[in-house]
Image: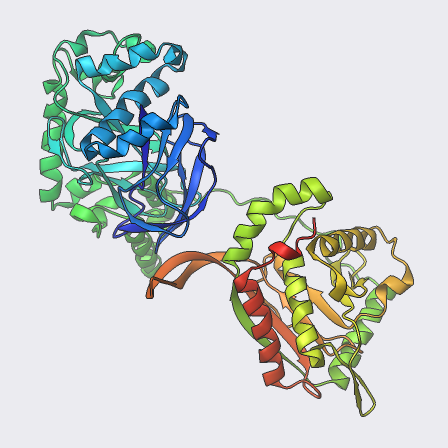
Length: 574
């Protein structure tokens, strides 16, 4: 038997996703919840985890292929052979979905029972079921809160029909049914918060047998015979189920009927998630006075924040929230011993100051900035950084990628690498790249000589070595001289970009901002779509006496194109 890995719902209005990278291959052994592949949609980039432990028998969707939500991406089995799994796609879709349920329930309920495969057929005798789990809903999202069940126990559901609404700190969305069948059991009640991967409900081919609730509560953990049956007493509503599943239907059905019709503020408050409640307490907002803008009038984070802003704007109301919810005490402020003192400049600080002033007075400096999509570079770096460090002993940061892109552009546009001597422009025969290093003594710029002949591994090695010896004050004097162009990584402290100063005799310096993730417009099949991308600002300051704005734009355009193409595999050098 094999289990289908399907593309889950990843947010409101998201109907399809593109496979960007498979993290596992056919024949690989995977653990439950281990990442299988990366998916990109117009709203989120995320990993799809394995629903069970087993062996990948078949990959049905290749990289760069786009499929709809609910499509089967791969099949995972027990590794007994791919031949049996090859026959599975010929079966009807309903049969494909019911088989995973029979395997998944025992795997999660009692791993020790995997040694006895014959018992896996037991659920079929008492009514097979498929667990509905909370899927990943975005990067860094680890939990979600059930805000409303759209179906009640006993209701029939179709494939991809919405079952419930989930709220996280990043998205509010519906969770669809992975299979067609009858909702047999609801495992997580409204306003309860659970982790990604937790079972929310069970769907089977029919109602569960009436005799099942007789099992005592402790048996829900042991599940020696029929896992799908005996887990029912473990549900939050177990105390109300003295006889049959009908006891579970009664509290669930009215809730599903009342909420859509609710219009009063008191009813709306029952829809509030724990996340919103905590936010309201922190902001001192009375939820009874807030009108919800969510589904069915539910109060969302945005509603609480708007109410908090309105309260601040009204002087009369400002004292009440403060009394209701005192703000958490801020972290103690670290007071520098230099506060209130007068210190002489160090010799190095005097040199830096004099050079900065001399450069600004002797040259005409300005800065040009471009934004670069480095999503592909980030993906390449994540893919190879482990092997890179194992083979070279150095960590792989973004800096060597930026350096090699800038070096290549300097070769094409040497005016950026030039120096001015009187009324002459000197074009060096090599690219000697100075790297700005922040030390306790001040800013120093050790130089990588003849950097144009080096690959990424060599650049990473020299950058790490020079930076370490600079901070330890172990540089030789000639290692600080001879630079023709400078890179300054201001993004290492979180800055988006700055306008760095060019230090003579150089004519330009490139500032590297922080790499940040944010929504961006990309083209998918010729159509614009929104996706989470990694971006960086590159700021080139230059001497306008010899370098024109068009020169700067051409140089930055070449760097941008090189980074966005991200074809660095042949330059890794390890």
